[in-house]
Length: 359
Image 1 (cartoon, rainbow, N blue to C red):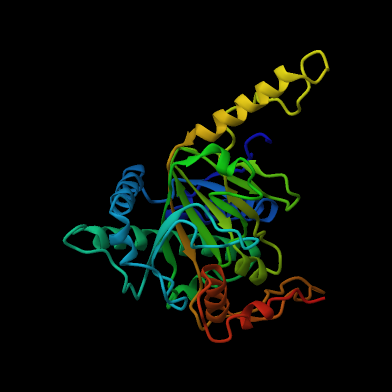
Image 2 (tube, rainbow, N blue to C red):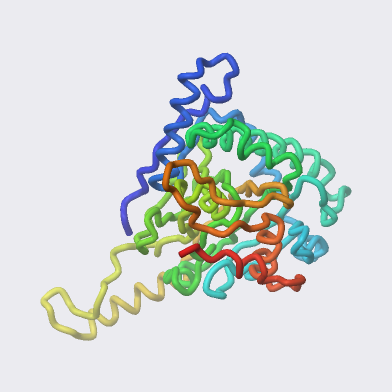
């Protein structure tokens, strides 16, 4: 496995400070642009949400997932147009039609029909709402910075959040045998994919497992958790909207085998093949089969524009041409949700079919 990804760590404090000089805010905006243009990812610190608030959200997430499966299934996600509620292990497919090994709960801005029993979790929704609103404020600020960096009005992207309905996702990756996800091409906690909205704000615990392929070469590198930061990545709609100035990059959640010392072939140390080498390989395989990888928790905020938004590539430079056809943000989102969860939706492939790159 490659070394950990060397993504920039950027302090967002000047951009959140209304009294900061414009030059400092523009400098932060340019750093964000450079990171998203090159990698599509950034570590953000000093972003207006404290470590204590993040820790409380992880505790709330654990309290939800610790419920009996019957209680969670009572909140099952069923409507792709709403995309809210509980999803069990293996129910979501984001890549190559292979299920992911995780469970999650989605919370939305306007419509949340699938809520847990308040008698069991009395403060669940109020606490989710507080964290949700903070993430929404942060996403508007990040989009404002990116608009400035491209030479657009500050509110060019953020004004399309007025009627937007982003989703806050609580994720729980259950303990799993190491052997099950030893080959990430077959089994992963989340298979390789790009996000399909504007951007994603991710809070991860210290377990690790997130990997990124910044240049779509198949060379995934770990995005190691850094205390005091969140991770922000560009998603597909923002890449389209920026006319490829900002990169939506592949990422996945895996866990490496428990030991990297397993032999790569059945050869013995002196170059021969024999029972000893075979026995060593068998012992390593048996150890992997019985080793349980720890649980992992993360919280993701998926930013989408208002559903009536037409996303047409921004053409700024002289001689620049649009690389994509315009798409309706609401149709785009609903169709991909229906595909990922194998749910019915009218004209489910309409938006995806219209997503082809302009030659």
